[in-house]
Length: 441
Ligand code: CA
Image (cartoon, rainbow, N blue to C red; front, side):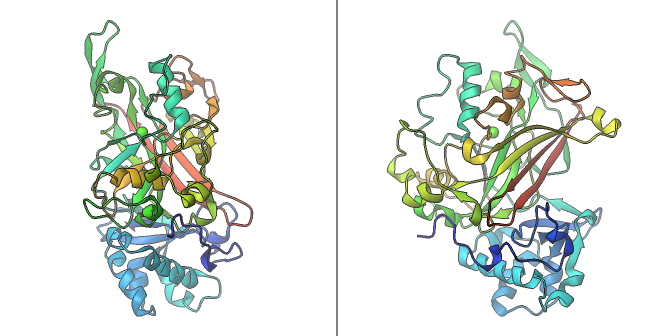
Protein backbone atom coordinates (compact mmCIF):
# COMPACT_ATOMS: atom_id res chain seq x y z
CA UNK A 1 0.00 0.00 0.00
CA UNK A 2 1.04 3.62 -0.30
CA UNK A 3 0.88 4.60 3.38
CA UNK A 4 2.62 6.74 4.52
CA UNK A 5 3.46 9.12 1.72
CA UNK A 6 7.23 9.27 1.57
CA UNK A 7 7.60 9.13 -2.19
CA UNK A 8 9.54 12.10 -3.51
CA UNK A 9 9.14 13.48 -7.02
CA UNK A 10 10.17 16.55 -9.04
CA UNK A 11 7.93 18.82 -6.90
CA UNK A 12 10.18 18.19 -3.87
CA UNK A 13 13.47 19.00 -5.63
CA UNK A 14 15.22 21.45 -3.27
CA UNK A 15 16.81 23.22 -6.24
CA UNK A 16 13.42 24.10 -7.75
CA UNK A 17 12.75 27.86 -7.85
CA UNK A 18 9.66 29.91 -8.69
CA UNK A 19 9.14 32.94 -10.91
CA UNK A 20 7.42 34.45 -7.83
CA UNK A 21 10.56 36.01 -6.27
CA UNK A 22 9.40 35.90 -2.61
CA UNK A 23 8.98 32.11 -2.87
CA UNK A 24 12.77 31.83 -3.23
CA UNK A 25 13.54 33.81 -0.04
CA UNK A 26 15.42 31.70 2.46
CA UNK A 27 13.06 31.84 5.43
CA UNK A 28 9.73 31.70 3.61
CA UNK A 29 7.16 29.17 4.81
CA UNK A 30 5.81 28.86 1.29
CA UNK A 31 8.50 27.97 -1.27
CA UNK A 32 7.40 26.20 -4.45
CA UNK A 33 8.00 22.85 -2.69
CA UNK A 34 5.08 23.55 -0.30
CA UNK A 35 1.98 24.69 -2.29
CA UNK A 36 -0.65 24.63 0.54
CA UNK A 37 -4.35 25.34 -0.06
CA UNK A 38 -6.45 28.09 1.55
CA UNK A 39 -9.79 29.86 0.99
CA UNK A 40 -9.52 33.54 0.17
CA UNK A 41 -10.96 36.71 -1.32
CA UNK A 42 -10.04 40.41 -1.48
CA UNK A 43 -10.02 41.89 2.03
CA UNK A 44 -13.24 43.69 3.05
CA UNK A 45 -14.96 42.68 -0.17
CA UNK A 46 -18.04 40.79 -1.27
CA UNK A 47 -15.94 38.82 -3.76
CA UNK A 48 -16.98 35.15 -3.84
CA UNK A 49 -14.62 32.90 -1.88
CA UNK A 50 -12.21 30.91 -3.99
CA UNK A 51 -9.36 28.52 -3.25
CA UNK A 52 -5.77 29.68 -3.59
CA UNK A 53 -2.30 28.22 -3.24
CA UNK A 54 0.32 30.05 -1.17
CA UNK A 55 3.55 30.89 -2.98
CA UNK A 56 6.01 33.13 -1.11
CA UNK A 57 4.09 36.17 0.12
CA UNK A 58 1.54 35.75 -2.69
CA UNK A 59 -1.38 33.43 -3.41
CA UNK A 60 -2.21 31.89 -6.76
CA UNK A 61 -5.96 32.53 -7.15
CA UNK A 62 -7.30 29.28 -8.63
CA UNK A 63 -10.48 30.95 -9.89
CA UNK A 64 -8.37 33.25 -12.05
CA UNK A 65 -5.87 30.50 -12.86
CA UNK A 66 -8.66 28.18 -14.07
CA UNK A 67 -10.14 31.01 -16.17
CA UNK A 68 -6.77 31.77 -17.75
CA UNK A 69 -6.92 28.53 -19.76
CA UNK A 70 -3.96 26.50 -20.96
CA UNK A 71 -4.50 23.50 -18.64
CA UNK A 72 -4.97 19.88 -19.74
CA UNK A 73 -8.51 18.45 -19.54
CA UNK A 74 -7.62 16.42 -16.44
CA UNK A 75 -6.37 19.53 -14.60
CA UNK A 76 -9.36 21.61 -15.76
CA UNK A 77 -11.65 19.05 -14.05
CA UNK A 78 -9.60 19.14 -10.83
CA UNK A 79 -9.54 22.96 -10.79
CA UNK A 80 -13.29 23.33 -11.28
CA UNK A 81 -14.46 22.96 -7.63
CA UNK A 82 -11.41 24.89 -6.39
CA UNK A 83 -12.24 27.83 -8.65
CA UNK A 84 -15.72 27.82 -7.07
CA UNK A 85 -14.32 27.95 -3.52
CA UNK A 86 -15.05 24.29 -2.74
CA UNK A 87 -11.96 22.62 -1.29
CA UNK A 88 -13.90 19.62 0.11
CA UNK A 89 -14.65 18.17 -3.34
CA UNK A 90 -10.98 18.30 -4.24
CA UNK A 91 -9.99 16.80 -0.87
CA UNK A 92 -12.26 13.82 -1.68
CA UNK A 93 -10.12 12.95 -4.71
CA UNK A 94 -7.81 9.97 -4.58
CA UNK A 95 -4.18 10.81 -3.72
CA UNK A 96 -2.98 10.18 -7.29
CA UNK A 97 -5.34 12.87 -8.64
CA UNK A 98 -4.27 15.32 -5.95
CA UNK A 99 -0.64 14.67 -6.88
CA UNK A 100 -1.39 15.37 -10.55
CA UNK A 101 -2.65 18.85 -9.65
CA UNK A 102 0.36 19.41 -7.40
CA UNK A 103 2.68 18.52 -10.28
CA UNK A 104 0.81 20.82 -12.68
CA UNK A 105 0.87 23.77 -10.24
CA UNK A 106 4.54 23.19 -9.49
CA UNK A 107 5.43 23.18 -13.19
CA UNK A 108 3.32 26.29 -13.84
CA UNK A 109 4.91 28.27 -10.98
CA UNK A 110 8.49 27.13 -11.65
CA UNK A 111 11.16 29.49 -12.92
CA UNK A 112 11.20 29.46 -16.72
CA UNK A 113 7.65 28.11 -17.04
CA UNK A 114 5.86 29.12 -20.25
CA UNK A 115 2.76 29.64 -18.03
CA UNK A 116 4.33 32.65 -16.26
CA UNK A 117 2.93 35.27 -18.63
CA UNK A 118 -0.56 33.74 -18.43
CA UNK A 119 -0.55 33.35 -14.63
CA UNK A 120 1.21 36.57 -13.60
CA UNK A 121 -2.18 38.30 -13.25
CA UNK A 122 -3.57 35.40 -11.14
CA UNK A 123 -1.07 35.86 -8.33
CA UNK A 124 -2.30 38.17 -5.56
CA UNK A 125 -0.41 39.62 -2.56
CA UNK A 126 -1.45 37.85 0.66
CA UNK A 127 -1.52 41.25 2.35
CA UNK A 128 -4.46 42.22 0.12
CA UNK A 129 -6.52 39.12 0.99
CA UNK A 130 -8.74 37.86 3.77
CA UNK A 131 -8.75 34.17 4.59
CA UNK A 132 -11.57 31.88 5.73
CA UNK A 133 -11.49 28.48 7.44
CA UNK A 134 -10.02 26.54 4.49
CA UNK A 135 -12.83 24.02 4.01
CA UNK A 136 -16.24 23.02 5.33
CA UNK A 137 -15.67 21.17 8.62
CA UNK A 138 -18.67 19.00 9.43
CA UNK A 139 -17.03 17.15 12.30
CA UNK A 140 -14.13 17.81 14.61
CA UNK A 141 -12.47 15.29 16.91
CA UNK A 142 -9.73 16.21 19.33
CA UNK A 143 -7.25 13.51 20.32
CA UNK A 144 -4.75 13.42 23.17
CA UNK A 145 -1.56 12.09 21.56
CA UNK A 146 0.90 14.27 23.52
CA UNK A 147 2.18 11.86 26.17
CA UNK A 148 4.24 14.48 28.03
CA UNK A 149 1.19 16.75 28.14
CA UNK A 150 -1.00 13.88 29.35
CA UNK A 151 1.54 12.97 32.04
CA UNK A 152 2.14 16.52 33.29
CA UNK A 153 -1.55 17.41 33.35
CA UNK A 154 -2.38 14.03 34.89
CA UNK A 155 0.11 14.74 37.71
CA UNK A 156 -1.65 18.02 38.51
CA UNK A 157 -4.95 16.18 38.98
CA UNK A 158 -3.69 12.77 40.18
CA UNK A 159 -0.13 12.93 41.61
CA UNK A 160 -0.01 9.15 42.26
CA UNK A 161 -1.45 8.07 38.94
CA UNK A 162 -0.62 10.61 36.24
CA UNK A 163 -1.13 8.47 33.14
CA UNK A 164 -4.37 6.48 33.10
CA UNK A 165 -4.00 2.75 32.28
CA UNK A 166 -5.70 3.01 28.87
CA UNK A 167 -3.31 5.69 27.52
CA UNK A 168 -0.76 3.40 25.83
CA UNK A 169 -3.50 1.22 24.29
CA UNK A 170 -6.22 3.57 23.07
CA UNK A 171 -5.73 6.87 21.20
CA UNK A 172 -7.89 8.96 23.59
CA UNK A 173 -10.20 11.54 22.02
CA UNK A 174 -13.48 13.40 22.31
CA UNK A 175 -15.91 14.84 19.80
CA UNK A 176 -15.47 18.60 19.54
CA UNK A 177 -17.53 21.37 18.01
CA UNK A 178 -17.23 22.31 14.32
CA UNK A 179 -19.30 25.51 14.42
CA UNK A 180 -16.90 27.46 16.64
CA UNK A 181 -13.75 26.78 14.60
CA UNK A 182 -12.32 30.05 13.29
CA UNK A 183 -9.32 31.07 11.25
CA UNK A 184 -6.09 32.80 12.22
CA UNK A 185 -6.50 36.54 12.75
CA UNK A 186 -9.75 36.18 14.66
CA UNK A 187 -10.63 37.53 18.10
CA UNK A 188 -13.04 35.90 20.53
CA UNK A 189 -14.70 36.80 23.81
CA UNK A 190 -13.36 35.33 27.03
CA UNK A 191 -15.92 32.65 27.89
CA UNK A 192 -18.10 32.71 30.98
CA UNK A 193 -19.10 29.59 32.80
CA UNK A 194 -19.64 27.59 35.93
CA UNK A 195 -16.66 26.80 38.12
CA UNK A 196 -16.04 25.38 41.58
CA UNK A 197 -15.36 28.13 44.14
CA UNK A 198 -12.76 27.82 46.89
CA UNK A 199 -15.12 25.94 49.22
CA UNK A 200 -16.60 23.87 46.40
CA UNK A 201 -19.68 26.07 45.97
CA UNK A 202 -20.38 26.55 42.25
CA UNK A 203 -19.76 30.06 40.93
CA UNK A 204 -20.59 31.74 37.64
CA UNK A 205 -18.57 34.35 35.78
CA UNK A 206 -15.78 35.03 33.28
CA UNK A 207 -13.17 32.27 32.99
CA UNK A 208 -10.19 33.05 35.24
CA UNK A 209 -7.88 30.35 33.86
CA UNK A 210 -7.97 30.80 30.09
CA UNK A 211 -5.30 28.78 28.27
CA UNK A 212 -4.13 27.78 24.80
CA UNK A 213 -3.17 24.32 23.50
CA UNK A 214 -0.55 23.88 20.77
CA UNK A 215 -1.84 21.23 18.38
CA UNK A 216 -1.68 20.04 14.80
CA UNK A 217 -4.94 19.78 12.87
CA UNK A 218 -5.18 16.81 10.49
CA UNK A 219 -7.70 17.22 7.68
CA UNK A 220 -9.45 14.16 6.29
CA UNK A 221 -9.48 13.91 2.49
CA UNK A 222 -11.15 10.85 1.03
CA UNK A 223 -13.91 9.62 3.36
CA UNK A 224 -14.88 6.05 4.24
CA UNK A 225 -18.25 4.36 4.05
CA UNK A 226 -20.05 3.80 7.33
CA UNK A 227 -19.35 0.26 8.53
CA UNK A 228 -16.05 0.06 6.57
CA UNK A 229 -13.08 0.70 8.87
CA UNK A 230 -9.91 2.09 7.27
CA UNK A 231 -6.98 -0.35 7.69
CA UNK A 232 -3.85 1.35 9.03
CA UNK A 233 -1.93 0.63 5.82
CA UNK A 234 -4.51 2.70 3.88
CA UNK A 235 -5.06 5.36 6.52
CA UNK A 236 -2.93 8.08 4.96
CA UNK A 237 -4.79 7.80 1.66
CA UNK A 238 -7.64 9.35 3.68
CA UNK A 239 -5.61 12.31 4.97
CA UNK A 240 -5.35 15.54 3.01
CA UNK A 241 -2.97 17.66 5.06
CA UNK A 242 -2.23 19.56 8.25
CA UNK A 243 -2.71 22.97 9.84
CA UNK A 244 -1.83 24.45 13.18
CA UNK A 245 -4.66 24.27 15.70
CA UNK A 246 -5.18 26.15 18.96
CA UNK A 247 -7.64 24.37 21.24
CA UNK A 248 -8.49 27.29 23.56
CA UNK A 249 -9.31 25.92 27.01
CA UNK A 250 -11.10 27.31 30.06
CA UNK A 251 -9.24 25.36 32.73
CA UNK A 252 -11.47 26.36 35.64
CA UNK A 253 -14.62 25.40 33.73
CA UNK A 254 -12.92 22.18 32.59
CA UNK A 255 -11.91 21.09 36.11
CA UNK A 256 -15.53 21.33 37.33
CA UNK A 257 -17.37 19.89 34.32
CA UNK A 258 -15.09 17.19 32.86
CA UNK A 259 -16.12 14.17 34.91
CA UNK A 260 -17.41 11.73 33.81
CA UNK A 261 -17.84 12.58 30.10
CA UNK A 262 -14.83 14.81 29.30
CA UNK A 263 -14.51 18.33 27.87
CA UNK A 264 -17.65 20.29 26.97
CA UNK A 265 -18.08 24.06 27.43
CA UNK A 266 -14.43 24.43 28.49
CA UNK A 267 -13.46 23.87 24.85
CA UNK A 268 -16.41 24.60 22.56
CA UNK A 269 -16.32 28.43 22.66
CA UNK A 270 -13.38 28.78 20.21
CA UNK A 271 -10.84 26.74 18.23
CA UNK A 272 -8.48 28.50 15.82
CA UNK A 273 -6.74 26.98 12.78
CA UNK A 274 -4.07 28.39 10.48
CA UNK A 275 -5.40 29.34 7.02
CA UNK A 276 -3.20 27.13 4.81
CA UNK A 277 -3.52 23.33 4.69
CA UNK A 278 -0.06 21.88 4.02
CA UNK A 279 -0.65 18.64 2.13
CA UNK A 280 0.62 15.22 3.11
CA UNK A 281 2.46 15.26 -0.25
CA UNK A 282 4.37 18.42 0.72
CA UNK A 283 5.32 16.73 4.01
CA UNK A 284 6.75 13.62 2.29
CA UNK A 285 10.41 14.62 2.85
CA UNK A 286 9.79 15.15 6.57
CA UNK A 287 8.46 11.77 7.63
CA UNK A 288 10.21 9.95 10.46
CA UNK A 289 10.16 6.53 12.12
CA UNK A 290 7.51 5.99 14.76
CA UNK A 291 9.00 4.39 17.84
CA UNK A 292 7.94 3.70 21.39
CA UNK A 293 10.20 3.66 24.44
CA UNK A 294 11.63 0.25 25.40
CA UNK A 295 9.26 -1.64 27.65
CA UNK A 296 6.09 0.02 26.35
CA UNK A 297 3.41 -2.30 24.94
CA UNK A 298 3.25 -2.81 21.18
CA UNK A 299 0.07 -1.31 19.69
CA UNK A 300 -2.75 -3.79 19.00
CA UNK A 301 -2.51 -5.19 15.43
CA UNK A 302 -5.13 -2.79 13.98
CA UNK A 303 -2.94 0.12 15.15
CA UNK A 304 0.35 -1.37 13.96
CA UNK A 305 1.99 -1.71 10.55
CA UNK A 306 5.44 -1.86 9.00
CA UNK A 307 5.01 1.38 7.06
CA UNK A 308 3.69 3.17 10.13
CA UNK A 309 6.73 2.07 12.12
CA UNK A 310 9.10 3.06 9.33
CA UNK A 311 7.74 6.53 8.56
CA UNK A 312 4.48 7.18 10.42
CA UNK A 313 5.68 10.25 12.31
CA UNK A 314 5.82 13.81 10.93
CA UNK A 315 8.89 15.81 12.00
CA UNK A 316 7.88 19.42 12.62
CA UNK A 317 9.32 22.08 14.89
CA UNK A 318 6.46 23.75 16.77
CA UNK A 319 6.52 27.11 18.51
CA UNK A 320 4.22 29.21 20.70
CA UNK A 321 4.55 33.00 20.80
CA UNK A 322 2.72 35.52 22.99
CA UNK A 323 2.03 39.14 22.03
CA UNK A 324 0.47 41.09 24.89
CA UNK A 325 -1.43 44.38 24.70
CA UNK A 326 1.40 46.02 26.69
CA UNK A 327 4.01 44.75 24.24
CA UNK A 328 1.98 46.14 21.36
CA UNK A 329 1.66 49.53 23.10
CA UNK A 330 5.44 49.64 23.64
CA UNK A 331 6.00 48.75 19.99
CA UNK A 332 7.60 45.42 20.89
CA UNK A 333 7.23 42.15 19.01
CA UNK A 334 5.92 38.87 20.43
CA UNK A 335 7.95 36.66 22.79
CA UNK A 336 8.46 32.93 22.26
CA UNK A 337 7.02 30.85 25.12
CA UNK A 338 8.09 27.40 23.94
CA UNK A 339 9.57 25.36 21.11
CA UNK A 340 9.62 21.61 20.56
CA UNK A 341 9.39 18.81 18.01
CA UNK A 342 6.28 16.88 17.12
CA UNK A 343 8.20 13.58 16.89
CA UNK A 344 9.17 13.86 20.55
CA UNK A 345 5.66 14.79 21.64
CA UNK A 346 3.19 12.47 19.90
CA UNK A 347 2.58 8.94 21.17
CA UNK A 348 0.26 8.08 18.25
CA UNK A 349 0.62 8.75 14.52
CA UNK A 350 -1.87 10.31 12.10
CA UNK A 351 -2.48 6.89 10.52
CA UNK A 352 -3.22 5.35 13.91
CA UNK A 353 -5.78 8.09 14.62
CA UNK A 354 -7.61 7.38 11.34
CA UNK A 355 -7.49 3.60 11.89
CA UNK A 356 -8.78 3.98 15.44
CA UNK A 357 -11.46 6.55 14.61
CA UNK A 358 -12.98 4.26 11.97
CA UNK A 359 -12.42 0.84 13.59
CA UNK A 360 -15.97 0.81 14.98
CA UNK A 361 -17.40 1.62 11.54
CA UNK A 362 -17.57 5.39 12.04
CA UNK A 363 -17.49 7.22 8.70
CA UNK A 364 -15.06 10.10 8.23
CA UNK A 365 -15.93 12.70 5.60
CA UNK A 366 -13.83 15.07 3.46
CA UNK A 367 -12.98 18.13 5.56
CA UNK A 368 -13.32 16.43 8.94
CA UNK A 369 -10.73 17.77 11.36
CA UNK A 370 -8.71 15.65 13.79
CA UNK A 371 -6.76 17.55 16.47
CA UNK A 372 -3.54 15.92 17.63
CA UNK A 373 -3.88 16.98 21.26
CA UNK A 374 -1.38 19.26 22.95
CA UNK A 375 2.11 18.56 21.61
CA UNK A 376 4.37 19.21 24.59
CA UNK A 377 7.99 18.09 24.41
CA UNK A 378 9.72 16.07 27.14
CA UNK A 379 11.29 19.14 28.81
CA UNK A 380 9.21 21.48 31.02
CA UNK A 381 10.08 24.49 28.82
CA UNK A 382 8.73 22.63 25.76
CA UNK A 383 5.19 22.57 27.15
CA UNK A 384 2.37 23.46 24.75
CA UNK A 385 0.04 25.08 27.30
CA UNK A 386 0.22 27.56 30.17
CA UNK A 387 -1.29 24.94 32.49
CA UNK A 388 1.99 23.04 32.15
CA UNK A 389 4.39 26.02 31.88
CA UNK A 390 3.04 27.50 35.13
CA UNK A 391 2.43 24.18 36.93
CA UNK A 392 -1.28 24.64 37.15
CA UNK A 393 -1.02 28.40 37.71
CA UNK A 394 1.28 28.06 40.75
CA UNK A 395 4.50 29.30 39.08
CA UNK A 396 3.95 32.46 37.00
CA UNK A 397 6.20 32.93 33.99
CA UNK A 398 7.98 36.27 33.64
CA UNK A 399 7.92 38.06 30.29
CA UNK A 400 10.54 40.54 29.04
CA UNK A 401 9.75 43.89 30.69
CA UNK A 402 8.76 42.19 33.95
CA UNK A 403 5.13 41.39 33.19
CA UNK A 404 3.98 37.93 34.36
CA UNK A 405 1.40 35.35 33.30
CA UNK A 406 -0.21 32.34 34.88
CA UNK A 407 -3.12 32.26 32.42
CA UNK A 408 -4.12 34.53 29.50
CA UNK A 409 -5.26 38.12 29.97
CA UNK A 410 -7.60 40.16 27.79
CA UNK A 411 -5.69 41.60 24.84
CA UNK A 412 -3.24 38.69 24.66
CA UNK A 413 -2.56 37.32 21.17
CA UNK A 414 -1.28 33.74 21.00
CA UNK A 415 0.62 32.82 17.83
CA UNK A 416 1.45 29.22 16.87
CA UNK A 417 4.10 28.54 14.23
CA UNK A 418 5.60 25.38 12.74
CA UNK A 419 8.13 24.39 10.13
CA UNK A 420 9.81 21.30 8.72
CA UNK A 421 13.51 21.24 7.96
CA UNK A 422 16.14 18.63 7.13
CA UNK A 423 19.25 18.21 5.03
CA UNK A 424 18.53 17.61 1.38
CA UNK A 425 15.06 19.18 1.43
CA UNK A 426 13.71 22.71 1.09
CA UNK A 427 12.41 24.03 4.43
CA UNK A 428 8.62 24.50 4.45
CA UNK A 429 6.35 26.08 7.06
CA UNK A 430 2.74 25.94 8.16
CA UNK A 431 2.38 29.73 8.46
CA UNK A 432 0.77 31.22 11.54
CA UNK A 433 -2.21 30.49 13.74
CA UNK A 434 -2.88 33.69 15.72
CA UNK A 435 -5.92 34.85 17.70
CA UNK A 436 -6.66 37.45 20.36
CA UNK A 437 -8.60 37.27 23.61
CA UNK A 438 -11.28 39.96 24.05
CA UNK A 439 -12.92 40.83 27.39
CA UNK A 440 -15.98 38.83 28.42
CA UNK A 441 -19.33 40.53 27.83
CA1 CA B 1 -6.88 19.65 23.13
